[in-house]
Length: 485
Image (tube, rainbow, N blue to C red; front, side, top):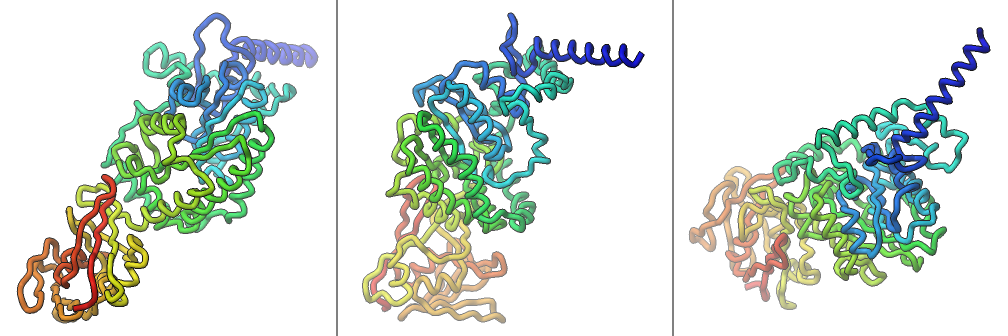
């Protein structure tokens, strides 16, 4: 009886394995026999079958930031036949495994790799779910974990149902693409921004040292490029919204600084290899300041993926990193975050003050004039067009003026040379040299500090001010002055 039971168990297992082999829900062994393929949305499980049995010479690798690429567009831009092998929330180790599996087939000529900083962290594999290494290791002895795994049929039948009802994409062109299933827009992004400012404070306490990040990069990214000089690797740094970067700067200083440093460091490592090139889209303000292109503070729409593919295809010098400009991308990103302000309508802008002054302009003005655009304001408010509110003490120092605060009267006096301006908290009228003067916006408290309208204040102190708009998402107020009167 025991022998018969054992024999039946073995026979049943063999039949189950044979059925799985023939049906092959993940197309791990072969394409479907005579019927249209059904693809699972479980990327960690589906991707090996795609890499092993479909035709391509170009692969797309990365996190959810790469899911909205259309392979046909990438193929046209890069001059090849593309297959998307994205894994949402993936670590560099997971990306390495799928890229290596595809490259080992001998079909890959080029790789488009969206390289997120957080993918280089050790990651939370428990949250992502178990990774099926047995589908990636090239060994057959452990395939029983697939052949005898009934759970692979769940996604398979689910995708069949989606196809029959017309509710799910069933083509390699739109596989993993979520562009049509989410809502994009400023309202959703601003809500996520407010939540992230509170919820992400915890993560700043648990950031890996830079040495860990660099080791993961060397072992899971650079090593693959070095091992395959016959493959052309194109890496790009994704364009999160500027609010994503601002939240990191506020809640996770270590991660924020690390990713700025890593962007340059990784490029320098890549630059030594003839088969690697790098593009940086983090400062592409036409996208990163347009919140309607995002569903949250990180994830952008398919339109941005299409624009990225086009920019890489034509080797756009605005985004191509070189030894000469590598540092400038991180420097510009830091400046965008430092000068970030939200308008009353919730639109992000880069607002700054530059000073143009003669040699006799006074210590404060001369110091600012030495580095135009690099104002020292620690906070800024854009209440409306043509004005910016900044901390009163910082404004006075920047304009080369003295500052005096009367706590009882809630008034402050700013003086420069023969000019004297008195402002009262929450009053839209100042007193300039003893005469009333209208203010476009009154001085007000924000974050425990008094903020004053610096453009109007500079004018009342006898300083010329002009407004420059280098682009649609930034404004710069240029203070022009000679010596103190």
